[in-house]
Image (cartoon, rainbow, N blue to C red):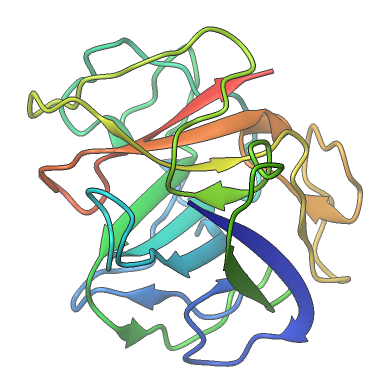
Length: 212
């Protein structure tokens, strides 16, 4: 597994491991919108290292609506197009997790999150609870699993620690229900475990399991 570390170096167009910045999209893939109609903020994107099982070599992007912030809950067997279907009592489908192998740089930069470079390093025995990709989830509650709408068992891809903040631009509004006035978090800042469909039935076939 690999730890994901945030640097203070500004990200530039074409950087592939970033918070904020310009997303690297698949050909003909558009920047995702919340079901409320607002363009989502790019929290982070990384190239998944080649030796990560199931997902090595893919580009991972994680977005969330800048005006909706909630926990994500859904049934064990996820419904058709669950990534754009409000579930768990939520009024909107406010997050999007994308995976692909393309390389088209978006024409504009995210206007919410500060564009900073990320670096990935091989993890050690003390990195279990860190922001990381690959390996096994470090559950803080009981282990959970989900089945994709296509019938595949979802596989672990990455985890975002509790209260992991992605620094906002100074001019951007504060996130609602925030734990950090200077940053945005995913799903209320819960511990989030990203699981994805190993069959790649859709670029957006991924699910954020929340625990706290």
